Length: 390
Image (cartoon, rainbow, N blue to C red):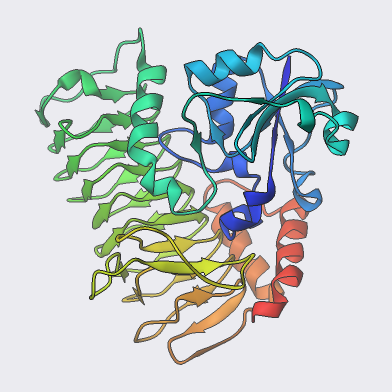
């Protein structure tokens, strides 16, 4: 049975991260949500997403599908309930549609909703950007158990120090670490294929360092941090998620944050993750067109794909940066920075699309990727769609 991961109405609440990807392509724990479902189902997945994203994230051709909510993280009980759905049946949790076994036509017309069965167990469901770091510890433990069960880790060099259970450190083929300290007492440590931990790093789990990612010299990591594929990270990082292909290569603090793909944080960039008065953090919400409460005391930076910031940039608590913004200069920029903005605390102008294309192309070439026409069309759509905010 083919699995199609669909975006629901909460997709817009996950902007700017979902401007450039379906909800299921968000990373929480070690894997993206789509990769989790592929592991559980043993089959490729398709996407039911925004029209402008469909070329990059295609649907599956088969008619009968298991349609699964793209914000939903799988577990054993949920997978059992989903795969036992019969044609025409659906599963819900309150107002949230979890899954349906229907044809594409029936899914589009929502003919099955009246017959949906209430799911009795707890779910892990991503509906806001900050939930990616808030739920990261639990998802990292679940992914670690699934990925390492019955497998043997590649050897860890004797130059390292492990505090806690050594079985909670797992290295994939080609991963390397030297003269660093790994503490597993608060979570597992997973080093993906060809990942590198340079000398002098101090890691307090959980940590997921994905394929070809690097922790630079004397990096300090704590609080369930995920460093996605091909990222380079240095300095001090607490409870944050790098989705992939982004750099924070120098000193500076990043905490309780989510960084998209193809981002770069300049040397000594810092963010606040706690207000001076210790009050609840509010962040920008696109559907509301204003700031909303998070329910969190700790919340840092949410940065969309292709955004960059210069040396010594300072981000206030709960800052949201859109896609392809370029931020620089002294002082704190405002807490909401629209996509394709150019500037800083002294003000912003529009980041012209040809310049944004040129930068994105150069950055992607460094990782052996191409800014092809599909990628350009996606950025063009976002540029037009977000003009109202600039």
